[in-house]
Amino acid sequence: MACRAGENHVWSASANFALPVQECATSVVSPEGECVAAGPLHREALVVADVDPAVATGFLARRFAPERYRDA
Image 1 (cartoon, rainbow, N blue to C red):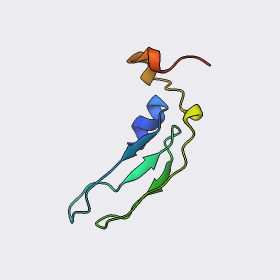
Image 2: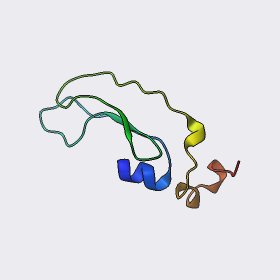
Image 3: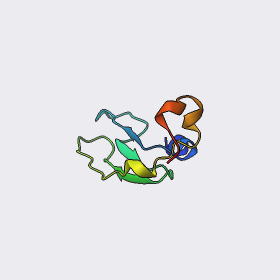
Image 4: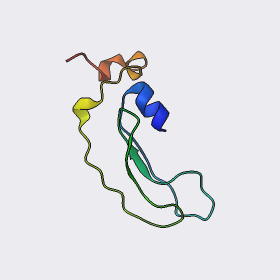
């Protein structure tokens, strides 16, 4: 998820179940690919993060939806 967020330069968030067997936790990843907030594995949690939509340029994502990523 971090790789895709960084590659496409978009914010990415994922939610996961609090189950004994899971591959990742609930998290929020910045357009630079940095995990800015994450919940614990195997437990319920609330994850809160401040995001700035202006830093998401959609560098590679604009190939598929250019109307969503206009030049500033």
